[in-house]
Length: 309
Image 1: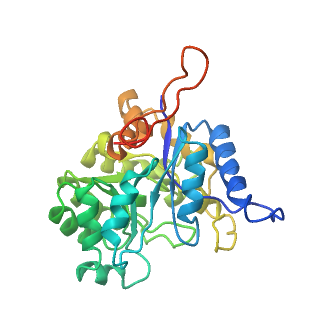
Image 2: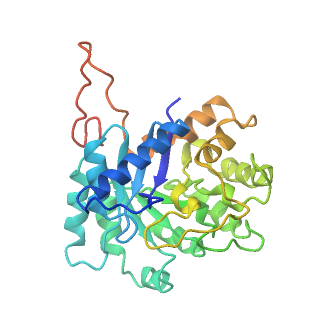
């Protein structure tokens, strides 16, 4: 089974790195790959962020490991040439989409309503660049975007719910789930199940989250849902953020996978879709080619071949 983590950032190492900035991104990449290998994850999508994970670091990681890593980019929607930036991003090998943060700063949703993101969204729709949305607290506004851009795949990060440790969970934690479920009628809206265990108050395998996740799967179907972890947020190891103490929903990378992989209520076909099939389809990310017959691994081609649409 193809297992793809649809959302990771680059981590903050546990110890200081004193060997120069040039080699630092390589260190972060090796940490990510080691964690993936330990948990049994085949591939992952790195989400860029200007402070947490700069685009150039993510793109360098993808260039070194094109079969295992891809990225989505966070662009400045206020740039005069934003349409050209989106077009260029769409041609970059390993760049699978864009990310828009509507949760921070607080006025982001007001700017969305005022049309500040329209040029980015229009260009993304034109080039069929999926847009991942951090939209906790503003899910009703996503329906307007989805209807205005019906050919644009919109992916709701973290189910659109506030999640620890960086943001306190709502009370109750799944309070706004109805807003997410209402988006299921819009066929261009997809959901990342990222961070779901952070909303649990029970030990692994987090039985209290399953009634809610089954509602999401019942509304959207497994072919519109993606497994993801956002694990370095869960660990509290993100650039620019202090380490966080243990909290009820804290969990290891392996636990963040196996709570779903070992769930008996899900069929094999559901797991195949959730754990990689949906991500491959929606993000247009074909698997890396198999090794050539002579023992040499086939090169991963440009966007439109092995790494593109």
